[in-house]
Length: 244
Ligand SMILES: CC(=O)[C@@H](O)[C@H](O)COP(=O)(O)O
Ligand SMILES: NCC(=O)COP(=O)(O)O
Image (tube, rainbow, N blue to C red; front, top):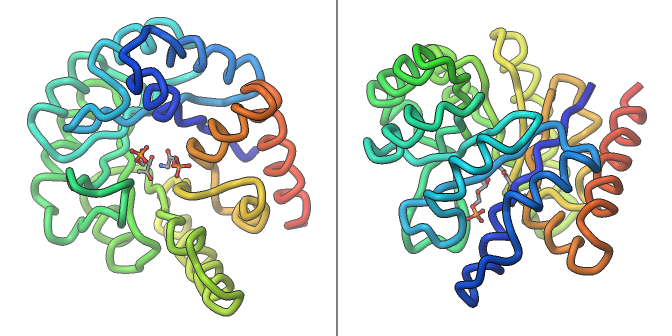
């Protein structure tokens, strides 16, 4: 069963644009769950450009599925995660000047820090995922940190210009998913997935979960959030069915 994690970051982007209390990320999370979201993903960035600290506790307490908290490798974020104790944490790279996440974690470079954070979070009952590029060395290093989940960065696939590059990135993700699965890791994927490019990724049977945010929230502006979530779930199921 391929699961959908709805990332609600950009509900908070719209809220913060005017400093109002609406649209409410927690209300969006509950609507997304009712429409079929299997989990709720949110990214508390160091610059708080969208999700804010107060969002964490209320969403953790209110949602009925599970919280997947994305966070950078900082002690501040680790303290937040240990306090909120989400079911899942996804460790992601972060640069203040970036428009959005630009690449995967360099697990090899930050191995000791990641292993230390992973142990602390797991001891607190949180499952740890590493957001990495579809790269064998990064996947192997991820396994060696003790993390049990990887999330393959699909940004290069999503942003690829030209069919040849697009297909090459798809092949790269297929291989990475198979390799991660062979190592015994839970393999997820996300970033830049939308209604036009999701099906080939959904067709990769080793992938357990897709985390999708920007495209769903954008679609929600046109059709409403519940229909946007339902449509994404339908496309994911169609893609998975095509894999047979
Ligand atoms: C890690 C990832 O690809 C996204 O989940 C991340 O949240 C993107 O950052 P923004 O939501 O700030 O664009
Ligand atoms: N980890 C990917 C995620 O949560 C959502 O990314 P996007 O769909 O907003 O690009």
